[in-house]
Length: 305
Ligand code: NDP
Image (cartoon, rainbow, N blue to C red; front, side, top):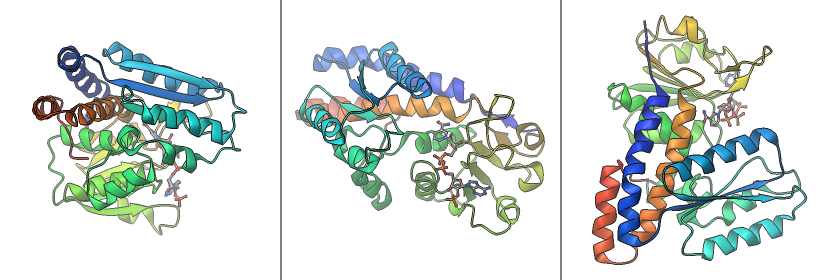
């Protein structure tokens, strides 16, 4: 029977470390890490997500604000607001909740965020850095996936990892981060012939397709680490993942539940990215600040990306 990976507990541990560091940072730098979350329109689901992000950041002692904009805002106006935040030295992190209304080009907006404030890690410069292996900000969900795998104690290096899904925000960056950990990586998608033949070889299986019960017990290698990124609402209105959890937990070595697996890590990684942006900004000040920022980064488990 698989061990259930408790994402909620791991997320809380990561946030607790951040909560402990913030008063020390405020003492040292005279200010707290700041995060600006922008939402366009008033979609109920998106509003719940952004409120959760802002409330979490504030509960950790950060200075987080929500900017709510009308759904008919022009792309140029939105980008102008981002430019103002880019120029403000008191702003560490900026994120724009996606999706945006169809008259706004999401790529233009995401790319307008300064590279060093792009806490989602979605803009082209950070994506380039991720793939080049140079200094940048890695996206939150993929970073969380790696943390969840590491918490099992199963070494990633040398393992065969299969990712189902090739989106820019989940599948592809998860593949690159696993490659950086020395896994041998395959990415499956709707064009993959015989998905089962590939997934059943995986020591580490990450599923991010958005299809309920796509992965059944016969598709999983005994003892595998199974990370279910999927979140969908099924016909009964229940939030479900992509893995047939009840059946697969009898085969896998480790498995994440939905909810309570990847979701809490995504938000914890957003907090961590905001801290890292703050520390990078603080580090730019002086050699003493640089030393201090390095110490705090080590305490919260700073990441190269
Ligand atoms: P996308 O729809 O952008 O991508 C889905 C990917 O899955 C595509 O690459 C698609 O292939 C592939 N896919 C879909 N169906 C199949 C199938 N039957 N067989 C093989 N591959 C398939 O979704 P996202 O990557 O944005 O998100 C994936 C899931 O993760 C969603 O449920 C989403 O809600 C969830 N999510 C959860 C987060 C969290 O915090 N827990 C954060 C972000 C996303 P193709 O490219 O060929 O179309």
